[in-house]
Image (spheres, protein in one colour):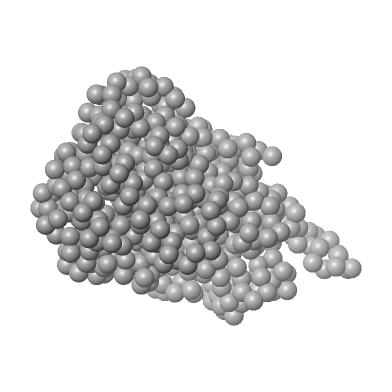
Length: 575
Ligand SMILES: *Cc1c(COP(=O)(O)O)cnc(C)c1O
């Protein structure tokens, strides 16, 4: 493949430029950490399927996120997770520069092409500072995803936002919209303000040279974080030290906050179209940022990527065309119950064999198997299930086996403690309930788990789960959700039909203290397991399989990125 030639075909029409700090392209490319990156990857895969004129910009992260090591107590340590970009793509010869700490940092990019079976293609540019002309420190800027301190993060965001826009310009792209996937890319707005600076003598108000309206017209912003502390903020001292005064601080403070530069505020003030990633998340965002208009486009997952092989075969037979047109899931009732169950059992066998092979725990194919895997962080309450260990033992002994996985961010101490607590509880339940915690959760393991368990559980503290996507992956494999009513599940849940809720309705006030809420949620969890879920699984398999069909026909039918991207096109990109 001649990179320059293949780039040429993408320059013919104007593009939507999708900026994301992380993108989960494929498992061998360690350029993602979790949900946000996998969503970005699914977005790109669907854009390619639908032939949406989109390109993506991200960082190379040659040393990856990290490899998770867990000792016998569940203490997590991290090792670098390098990968070989040259196995997947080629670097382009073009260079751009961004001034950081007074040094001209050179940036190049690698071109990856996401191809769809439909013939659609989406180019992804991976920005890279690892070049001999840069100092050792600068060569490392694009090494680690979410590594380092504030200064390191700011430099990464400058390379992504500012360097990214310069690279697109250098390569000759015409950009219709800039889509910021989370606030990490917000600095691109500054570069655009400079690009579109008005050449006028605005004597009465010198700030009029900054064409905020023009930049707003060009930008789309998707926020993913329903908690204030989760938004990137940088002190103006740090900004001055690293970036200097690209635009007057007086102007920058008006756009990004007086005290600190808040990347979300910056994006909000320079974007016409802003959205949350589920209906509830939109409401929460409006409360968090009063005075701004939010839309909502509920997330999805890429159907083909997140359906296991045995289910794909069944879907191909009864709903051909489903991968590019997930609306066809509406006809899932055509799939005979036995065939659906066989396809599920094939996936379950693969998972159980994998678990037994790695751990020797001796799980079996017949026992109701529950899965819980996602980033290990306090609000997701990975240990809620263990709130009353003796109760769990009574409910689950001989009837339920459980599979866990998930990494904690290296600096997330409470997240690491959740993993240790789960390990402790696993030990306490040894001999009574079979539970494992698998290391190194990634996209491959995710597909194995969401398709191979019987029930997918999620227990976030409301309203902190902006959307959540792993439950949608489960639904694509006929695996029902058993989850707290937050994020997407508020929209996908029909009690006893698509799955089950844990805890109160989403409208219910949350003025009870957190401990009482944990208590209430755990109580509901045990009660439903004992009285509804376990009896149905063992005693009423036909109803169970009907619910599996509903998960596909109602949840996968809607919560996919093909539907999501059509919404972005009609609401955000074409205006
Ligand atoms: C889908 C996915 C996630 C997101 O899981 P949530 O339950 O939505 O938080 C995280 N990590 C990996 C590897 C995934 O594939």
